[in-house]
Structures are given as C-alpha cells and as structure tokens.
Length: 117
Length: 111
Image (tube, rainbow over all chains, first blue to last red; front, side, top):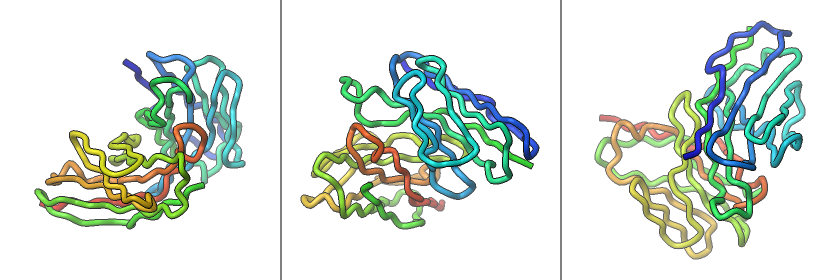
C-alpha cells in the first residue's frame, strides 16, 4: 500500500532563518506531488506541484521554493522565513494522470506546523 | 477554474442526517465532484466522488442533479466524530482544477 510521510511535524523558527520540509511517498512510482499551505482557520492554498523529477510548477509567488530530487521525494524550502510563512504545510500525492489508478484523489501527509517568530 | 460555493458553517446534533450543498455553476463536461473531510491538524481525507446522479459508499452519499451545477453531500446519522471541515472540489481527473480547495464548510455536531 502507498504511504506518505512528511517531517518535521512541528517547527518553530525565527524570522530570517532557513526552512526545509521534506516529504516522501512509498509504494508507488511516478506520482504527482503537491505542497499546500493552510493558514489558521483557512482553506488550503496550493503552493507547488510536480509531475516528475526536477519539474516544479509554482502557483503563488513567494519566498518559498520546492525541489524534487528523486521520484518520490519533495522538499519545500526557504532561504529566509517571514512571519507570514507561518502555517500548516501539507504534502500530498496523486497517481499519475492516465494511469488506471488515477481517480484524481489526493492523498495527504500528516502535515508540518510551522511557527515563525 | 470551476469555482465552488459552500456554506461557511453548519450545526447538527448526533443521530441527525446532515446535507451540505456545494454550488458549482460553471462545471465543465469532464469535471468530477469530489468531497474531502479535514480534522484539525490533519490533512484532508477523501470521502466520495461522483460525476452524475447518486453515489453512495460506506460513509456518505453524493447527490448530483441533472444539470450538475450543484451537489449535496449527505452524512447519515452523524456522530461527534463527524465534526470537521468538509471541502467540495470540482475538476477533471487531470490538470490543476481539481486541486483547488475553497474555504469549506465547518460542521459542528453537538451531543
């Protein structure tokens, strides 16, 4: 069965410090990968998505970046955090479009709560 | 993007049936309707997906009228553990439109 893990679960960082959140998927290959952010009491905002190694699409201009160094690894980074970067970050995956297992369903990780002070 | 509109919040009591309606007036021919449930500090979880008429699974039913411009998620006999935020998404099985989450409906179930 497929699983998705992201870490760390909780992070408290000072303004201006770097950030690295990591997400890995197991039990599948060539997944589409996504990073979402959820501010307190708000809906989910799609930040980045990737259809393959090294292929990243950014949905919202910001000081965050994403990378996909391996097929099932997705990393969210920042060189200098802002207060507004605080939130709940969720990694998700979906089967590759066109495959028999693709129903469009998104599978989410446990989330990483980031507090920038 | 197929914009969706849901009530911001709903209240119910244990044992009641809850119906949450989502409006999606500009749904496209190839679009599916998918509902997710999210508990605090967790990622959303898929509940049900449909294209037309009625779909039922072990946790919910999804009613979609012929014009497909709205859909209703029906939760039978809710319990306290059904307190969560429910999101309606509209999009194809490919592409980015099915990745857009609105503000959702916050369901509060009272004892």
